[in-house]
Amino acid sequence: MSVRHGLSRTATAHAQREVQKLVDELSGVTAAVIATVDGFDVASATTGDTDPARVAAMASSIVAISSVVAEEARLGRKESVMIRTESGFAVFYSVHHRDGELVINVLARDNAVPALVAYRAAQLAKSLAEA
Image 1 (tube, rainbow, N blue to C red):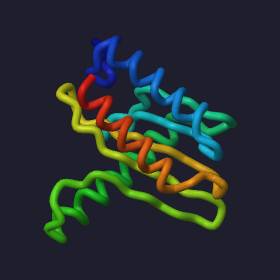
Image 2: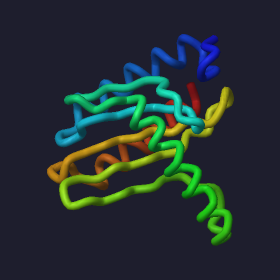
Image 3: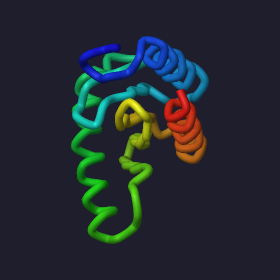
Image 4: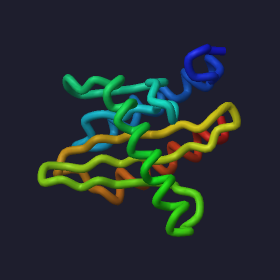
């Protein structure tokens, strides 16, 4: 077990394989990072100079804010957040794993298909929750 994130080596290796696969297979995706809710990088794959540790820390804040919004608006447990910008988007998906909460972060350029990226992130969340 890792002291940093509490996942087994097997679960961590699975996470690493899956984020690399996501980045390799989806056009326009520049980074995929799996992080703990307190901002530690668990597994990552990037196509450029994106710093996975910074993405993990950023995701921690985004997920915390989205949890408060979901609770205050009585919308149920948060699942995902998408931030669209003029040159791309970021998707944050919650993973409810037995060893602790995780967040999937996917960064993509504007040539990526948002629905496809969101679908693959949701599939990854399900896969990780069951790992």
